[in-house]
Image (cartoon, rainbow, N blue to C red; front, side):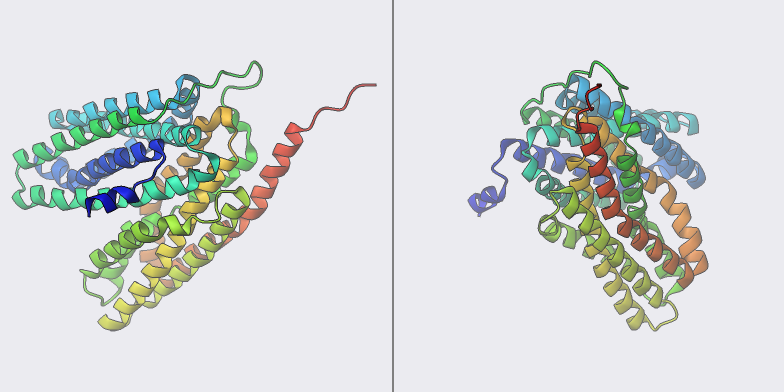
Length: 412
């Protein structure tokens, strides 16, 4: 049994090290996310409004860190940046134990989010530099499946602390989070070193900010990424406020999503190693997300069983769209980024995802839950339109790169 499990691990040493690092890091995040709001309100004494505002401020700080941190990874090496930011984040997480008020909470949360954004940008650059081009998307898919396993394990163990609901229990979980984050950063050292990229003699340092096609693709992907807020925010509110389905259906839908991602994310990434194949995946994702929105809307006003069936069907279509959206995003972000600037390009592309996380909760709660089926239809059409625009934008990016690489005509 043990030997069979070992054989399932990737043979490439960089991928294997990243798998173990991701498992430790995602378990740490699963632990923290599960207990954080309750810890801040019950143990620290913050109000729910203060926690929400503080986390929003921290998320905005993280938005600003991705591109500069990615550029730093290009200049000094992604492994060094990833390890440094990861260890600093692990240490700063212990700062939550000293928080006694709102100001301290915002400072620590913003610092953690800044380091998290830098860690993510460097991670993308490290994958680009240490994994062969044809295996990068598959590696990302494997790491995402492992991430879902880690989140589940973390949430399970966090339940023990929630059961006791005491400060010592929460302190123990935070210390464990920091230890796992330290382990995750340390395991990155097993990934082969990627040499720093020297700065070009001419041109701006942050070239990604002048790459308009890539900026557009990051924005389109950010719009598609709003669907993550559907499962975490819109669907739970929709279930309990606008349908007759039992509240436990929310947990069932979350488990269904995580299970499908773990089992099928790698398979769903096939054919997305090129930007053109990835664009097709994102176009398909937009259509699937439109279908999911329509199915979610049908759950309103139905009996409990009919509503539950509609929600399960919607969640299945939703997760299929999620699988293709994620796979397409990796193919585009890697294949259209120049080798000497993978860090800043991965940082910029990740900013679109992070921005979606900032705006999605309030936007979805207002439009979907407030408007009902017209809100679902609106978001579905936005998803479909965004996905449909990706192939043309990829062709624009290809033309721009071809023109930039063409030699200038000689002067007469």
